[in-house]
Length: 292
Image 1 (tube, rainbow, N blue to C red):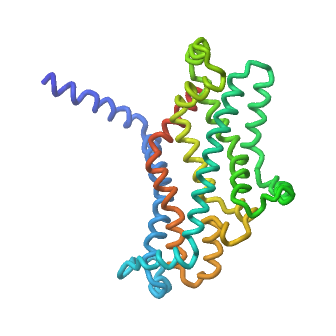
Image 2 (image 1 turned 45 degrees about the vertical axis):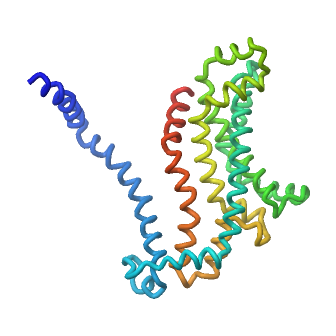
Image 3 (image 1 turned 30 degrees about the vertical axis):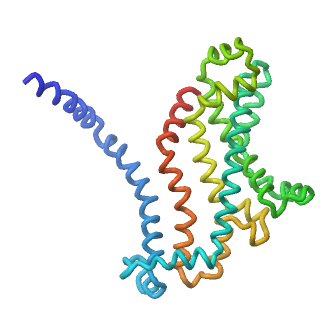
């Protein structure tokens, strides 16, 4: 009887707590379920539609395919030149995210550890980047990039992505760094380490959860970007996936299943990255919020 009561006790307390929440407790669980459905249902229709023929789609856009047509993916990959665009996307995403992580963590470290009065000013200055839409500066930036010879260049697009995403990265890193004990850094300085050596060897490895959060958030934006690539990329060999898909849609607008297949090919890599790093993503957001 004693063992039974110890097992049933916590369950009964949890049940009473949920019952006490009433309808608000039910809504608390319904909201994330509804949110997940809003994302999963369109994605399911996108995948199902990509496996159908054009005739089947015209007869009934929401019906299941009679026989999956995986050749739609081959057609989209070849005709939309997604192979070259995929390589461009990987190059832009890797170098842009690496730059965001490197410069964002360094800038946040300088702002948080700077003991002067201007540290608060610079933190607020970077925070303005989260408020002011970057699209307002694109026309002026385009003129500057033309003068610098960076238009229609992957390097120019990488620089734009780094600048656009730095405010968010600095905000996340600064919130986490506020909770990193100074004793760890002081011990390294006693051993003769320079400030940069302290950051590289002591602080940077401690930012692992925030690194994952920054990588996921910025990778999604860089990978799916269309506006910046429309502004700064012109030649076919430099197109990214979003831009190549847009051009492909104007050509294959009558063959919707093939267009759906192209969209699935664009989404799958970044979705896989999120699935792999989601545990670190949630951890980084939580720790940064608590420590900030």
